[in-house]
Length: 184
Image (tube, rainbow, N blue to C red; front, side, top):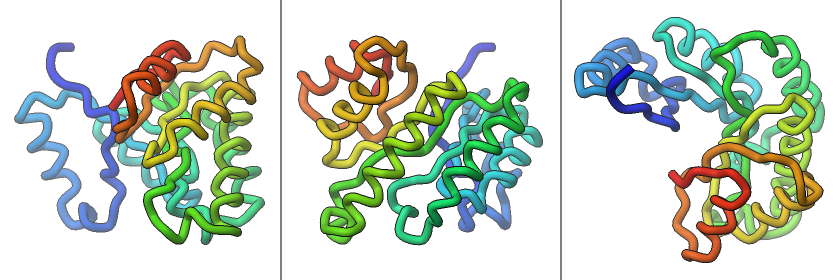
């Protein structure tokens, strides 16, 4: 396979609904031979799975920090069940998009800050349980993301994944890389 891989493509977003096939075809024409479609909430799990299979791409299942306000606590159990259900699907490649967002003011204050931190740690635990890489959402949150990875990994778990939208320091970049991450 020669060409580009888009490691973060939200083809399930409503703005693509009318012409998602044309969007994917244009990407392929421009050399994007494979896309990873990360979910942002439980309601999108079926659609990212469907789209990945329709276009020969890959997908990830997770609850994005921008969606924790409307997420239900039982959504973590739904994620666990979906990861178990699709365990043998080679197109399921990660838990994601998960992470922390300290850019949006509302998410920086209680109770949403603690809620997104809870969802992040619990999704890391599920990634470890199902032995899957993670796609991390990083907006002004690199240090706390690293703290969570170290805590859930107990210092020795072989994390893999992508730190998406990374814009931290060189030291933070090196810390993610040393834990097994690529920067996006």
